[in-house]
Image 1 (spheres, rainbow, N blue to C red):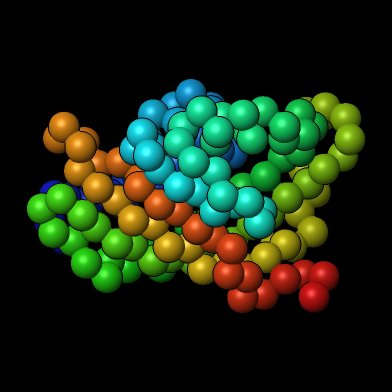
Image 2: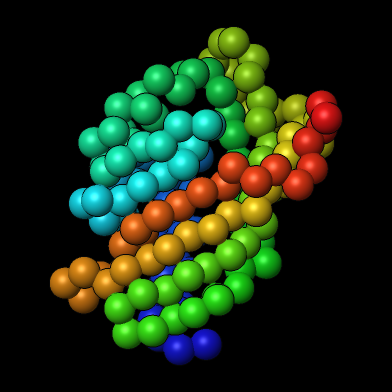
Length: 139
């Protein structure tokens, strides 16, 4: 794995970590100015739309996006394309709680596709989709 690939991988993992930790400013900083995120049946364009959408998330929801099996379809000097699986574990108690949440299993497994582009020596997410659900607990 070359340096560019490792940097892109780290950006993808950081994106989902920031999402789970509600660090929306840090998440938005990983997006290209014209980024597209296909999320929950909508197309979000740019960091501002992403932040607005994320502000609508439930304040009591606890969620973990587990990213695994990352593979690179291409990685050139200015562009990288990455595929992965995303396992989603969610708990929505409707109230704030402390300590660990009950683990009732994986809610879904999805295909993730991320296109990265290099802008001013930084790898940023240009396009992201995780709309292709492979397995769902309530299917």
